[in-house]
Image: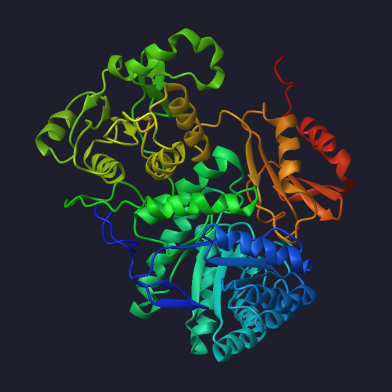
Length: 580
């Protein structure tokens, strides 16, 4: 299977056009920017105002949750109010469990989002062996529940997103394929086949996950499967890293997942999911769309990694200036001598953001990956730490992919985010963050890289912080607590931003612990996927606490819930007292 023509030479994937109201997705249209309002759908005035606020900052498509038929019916008044105020932005109804809500919402909005893992399915996380007959019967049941919506959308010109989420797959899929990228793809294809059988093609796909590795693999596998199905399976792709969190962490995680796929030519519309007010998502999404850089390396080389599953390159361990590099060691962080000299006086105060070694004194071998003679000589030598010289006319992702393809695997690779070190202290940090995260993060998620050097950021301390945060987001070096936090919507049962801040204040010192903060059951036990502990809205002002996907404490008053979460972490031996 192939998800793109070449790992070294990228171009935008050609798709059919799907129209959402007056906005066209796919084809030669620009990457469209989406977001979602956060208020209660029954609050008509707030829903209208939040939608207008998003449209005013450049959001092209707005999503509103419709968890019940009552909420779905109120979309009539929201849309009417928007049109009366001159706002023509298309509206998407977000549907999970209730086909009846989808049918009502489709009367009023331009697009319906369905999650195949939730739509007409009740997950019990049951372990069951499905025979082929059992499986076929389940598919027929889904067809009966899904077909009326497809027919309505076809007749009334509504678009649809078939949006699978990692961790919210049906028991049917989980038991046959597991909680895997393959399971996500198969779940979406089941629904797409039903739509196509009914002659309906106005849909896009999404494969969201809070884990960038899983998200990247799932989208690649989806695109490869669509290509294998035939040329008329050229549906547009909606990209997103779900529950990315807030601040720099949320932006970095989004850039790794969304940016790496955009640079490989995948993606026609994007949503950056931040645990912040929705208007703050739009500048990030627009900057990501603007930052797309297609590789143009005209080379032929074997695949340096399996694009559909993760495996770190098996390099020989090295010791660089007393630091373990390669082998099983965590990915190291390098710094240029000029920047090291600028911060040397405050190393003791830098905590977890200290560099591991200085680039110039590490004996790094630099080689142009197109120089086959130099590579042949290097491949005949003992294991080395290898990188690429600055100033070459290749983009970093293509260059390091080519190096990984042609360099003997025993050699370790030091990644750079750019081959043009920054000389501009005034460059907006968001631009650097997104560019560096997409380049370095993409390679790390493919198992390439034993050390990294951030050169796109001029400030030494800020470049080190960015390096470590990219490693954390890519799962390559966990040095602090990892948070999975949903971005809030009308289903949310508590204030996500305030609650996330309180939980972080209490737990930020816990290295290697992953905590999910979910506003409701939809983004609850399934969507937190691989978190150690979960804080989930169970009812208004009531919290359920989870260990993994298992609920263990119920209906805790919200004002007690953070302390009870700390107690739960202590019970499982993962609590340490914060440093003085």
